[in-house]
Structure formats: structure tokens, C-alpha cells
Image 1 (cartoon, rainbow, N blue to C red):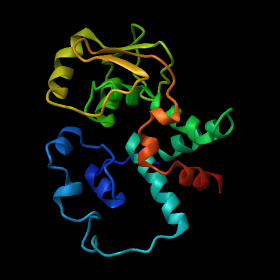
Image 2: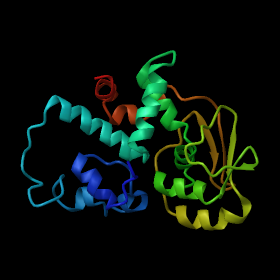
Image 3: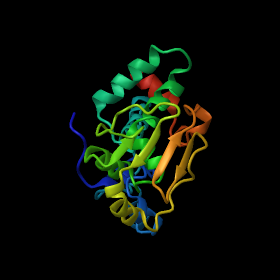
Image 4: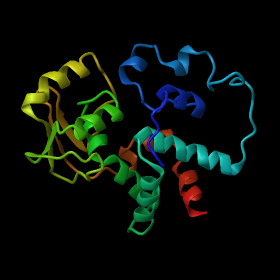
Length: 209
């Protein structure tokens, strides 16, 4: 399945929650999720819809998928790896998503959205342990140093100017002046805020059916 390229905030409205797809716009209070006055897009957006148990599971899976900007094929792959690993499946699943290079760049506040972070990586602006990495799904590991290459720093600083974003998690250290950071540890489920926004148990049920 190809990555969605349509109106980003339409997805947030359809799923009824902020998926952090528009960083500065949301912080400026211009988010369509609030501004449109109704949660769902379309002529019948305000109408009530009865959702089945399958629909509830599907909706939670869609939230996670669009939040991290991954394809259905990648989601299934990440679940299968998590399900066959030691430990809790939901925690392993989240760890795989959180340690993607594009997500780490976003968490370090070097980009205002994960999509912008993915673009930075894809265009070769990011170094990992001093070497250029242009694969957004690259798995960042403990003690790896992530930085924006010197020639790209001015443009990145301009992009993130005025952006507040979420608190940098404890498993990362970030220097937003030098645009350099490091992964201190693999995050636990309790350290991943996504776990508080999405019902992971429903997603596990969706893929386990």
C-alpha cells in the first residue's frame, strides 16, 4: 500500500485525535481538528456512527499507522517481529516504531513533524555516528549519536524556529543548538507517550485475529 499523500489533518479529524501531522500549525491554534468545529470531515461528519468491535480495532491501528507514517506492509512486519520477540508484544511493537531514525529525529526536535523528519533523512541531511544515513526506517540503537550535517544546519534551524513540540523523552539527549543528540537507552513502554494516546491492546487483537 502506498503512503498516504492527501490532506494530513483530514486523517486526524476522521480518526478524532491529534496525530501530530502538523506541528507549527497545531501549536498556532490553526489545526483543522479544532478549527472546523466538528471532529469528522465531510457533509455528515457530525452524525453519530455505531462502530463495531472490528471497527474499533481498525481505528486504533490506523491511528498508529498514520501517526508514524508507515505503510501497512511495514506495520505487519513490525508486529510479526514483535510477536516473535521476547517480552511483551505491545512494548516491542512500540519500541520498533520509536527507534526508527525518522521518529528519533522528530523526538529530538530537529523537525516539526515525522514527515519532515523523514524528508530530512531521505535527502541525506542526517548523520549517525558520523556517517550519512538516508533510510528513514533505519533502527537507531543505544549510544548512537544522531546529528544534522553541518551544511544543512542553517536550513533546519529555520524550519524549527518557534516550534515547541513535546518534551524530549528521557531515553534521548538533545542539543537543539548543535542539532546533535544521542540515544541513551531503548525506551520502555511507560516512556513512550504513544502508549497513553492509543489503545495498543486493540491493535494487538487486530493483528492477532
